[in-house]
Length: 553
Image 1: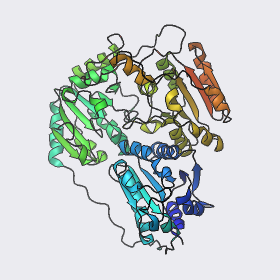
Image 2: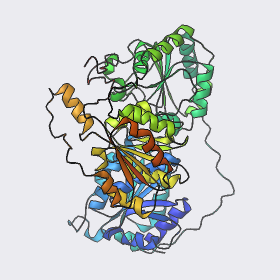
Image 3: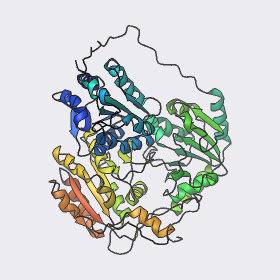
Image 4: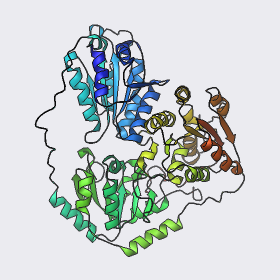
């Protein structure tokens, strides 16, 4: 068979059912081989949209997301999405076409050094130089994407390799299947960790997205049951702690809850599980949890001791290490204190006036959404309000661009999530700025009749940038005005998607009811006051206890 046919054959062998992409000259042989195959291709309207759809598919399902693009501008349009997948540890395989090897280095039409460009935004990148290496390379790409710390892998395939003849190797069933590698628990480090936990008076569990990616939610919640302690999560860790855990304090960091930030700043032991001490979490690093000893467990050796020196560091699988580290403890006074922090600094929704208050609207959205709904969020003020005021039963139900903070993420990610979970409700929550970044994917929703619910929170501003300009740049509002936004409901209607626009509090509940009862895609346009900001906020360079709350700005 041809190399292109082998690519599709291998995708089928890997169990790939959905591929997102956009064809072009250098990848046409692969698209020709795709014609009539078992693999379902979804034509997105921009390569970035295709790659974000693959990310949404992967994050909501736990499977590998696959995207394809041609050479040159097709491949470069994937770069932002691959960077997003790398920083958020999402398993994605990107297959790109490349000009034939005979014209490489001649500035051929649509020739770009994709291998060189992608090295810094992927876990690994390959260029296939010999068709005999194609099968092994693709299989290795799928293995790398999910092994250890997951991430994106790119395979660049020149057109002559796609057209070359290759012998498909028969898949043999080995008589002696390899035994799984025996892992040895770090006995000394586990002993040290248990001693630290037993000796702590004010412990806090700091939970990142790595817990979920390790499939260790059950082990985490068993650990928190045996050793009751306050817990906080990162943006990607939300939904990991059991909903009925009374000691969960919410998200920490720049826009975290006051209770979470105060508890971490006051603790004497910080147990960091699958998290990386990101600057949006720690605030001023030197002042982060200043009196705490640190236990840090991660699958990536590069993260241990990278930003905060751990008193006890363990590299390994949280599913094995959490049960081995568990020890009965109960710090009654500390738990009572953190409960008081939670009550004292709880959210208030008694917003004056008739205009829609985004935090209350999003809480109402959360309360009325089906239990297993998936929320795909864009980036900006609405993203932080979603994290603060919506509840999630699993990290697979909260897809948000964390490490890269990519505007335009939400709508295409919702497409991937809806295809991964066709029986579940998928909601894309976007801002008026973010929505316009990949608005063309409304065409994908229309073509494939995807029942994605779209909520646009519209303040006619680049809200988060405008908030920073207000607070830290003397109210010099440079290039954040979006008052010339299109009529979003009419825009959706052009794609045969019905919608409705609201601007008053009393319109919210009927509008949510109408959206959820509509059987197909629906756009709800929500106008809010441009003066509303996200609180609390840890100013850049400040310690986490020095939060602005709106009253002290």
